Image 1 (tube, rainbow, N blue to C red):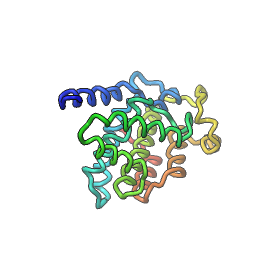
Image 2: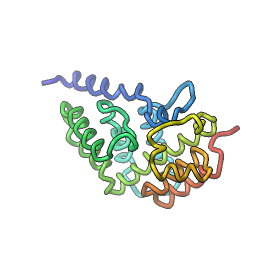
Image 3: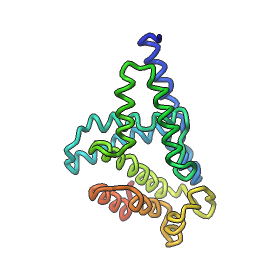
Image 4: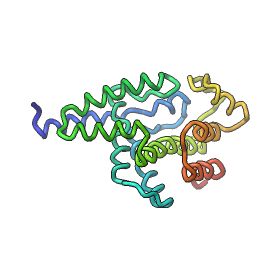
Length: 211
């Protein structure tokens, strides 16, 4: 039986791995930048995006619950790594991720409650889970746009699994930029509501950071 102090430190050390786990998608797309986003940074950004979306669009949600879900939604990646949908069947990834999360949380007194929130996020059925899921996906879109504005990706040099996806290939064939392709791909693939679509549309048509 672990002491409370041991459980705290064990959980912290496991989660700390995400600070050094670089987002695989950016590596696959060969983002050329001195420092690329880690999974931990992605988690932070999803939470900040959730706060802004809830503020500006007046969602009637349990925001602390949303932020808690987003805090743990990548927990499994501390064990299985950051796997993209183009690298592994989503059902297989989900299976591995759920097993990893159960293992990580087994030693915490509130582990069952945390695991329940993680599974609720993954199911995308409650209002909070749907909102959090959209924040997770839109954050990736916006980060892609920021990297594209910096000129971090040369599509002529890229050779990654995503290029084998028919939807990705079709969008790139229509002369869209990397981030325009990604924004459009997400709109076609994920259940964005009208507010998330509005933000996505803004990102498509405007520069996000000052020149």
